[in-house]
Length: 349
Image (cartoon, helix red, strand yellow):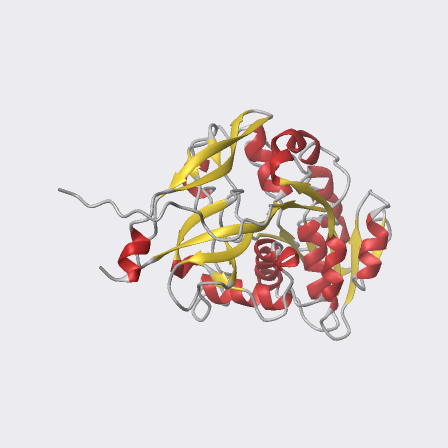
């Protein structure tokens, strides 16, 4: 028996994962991970991020059958509404896997779990020098990048972003890097002004006076915010709708100037690569680009809270409450070192 064969025969490994158990209730549940085969890798999680918009809706319970397939996370277990293991912003160290990955820091679209097993080809190594904590923003940066493609933002454009949460501010930062672009983030929370300034983005507490934008991104998650976004458009302007409302119905007024000004509302969703890029860009290439874009140290300003993994079930009702303070919350895991398992090989027969 080779050393590799012996490692595959190690006993399973203990792990804990966060499960959404019922509306407003979460719990850590134990799991036993089998030893990986040659195509799999074991990862010790160091950080994960909570995607507030999506996980708030999951925490409340998604009952429409349409969510069963469309809103599944790549490594989700369970079915909507409950119980479900959900999440897609994990960063950790490969403790066992293919030789080229062992010991490397990787990003994975994996749930909140202290150790997990994943196909090696789904793990994306972090670029050299990217802090693992900031790398948890990769899925949100990927969403923002896709939206900028969907909106066809260009140099010199007047751009408004309504909703200065995590995704909205990432969009604003990407657009602010376009030569000559004039970018304003709009949010009713005045505390977001300092973060916008740190990202090089203008800030406004209301959309009043912002009525001639070439392009508007909406990321507030409210019907009122979408109406404000429409009101910011100039003649034949475009609104890129990024908010996802889950089971909620949203009413907006499309009377007044909407038709005679020939405005557009375009949906943007990260599940598919933007049509203009799709012939050349795979999902992996887009995720690698998102990780590279996180090299910007200014983006650390978006992470406003850390919570320990052991405290996560008790903290979630506050973190995911409507109107919760802060922007991005990351989950901190204890350093696990290597996967521990008894060095025993069980043979059949």
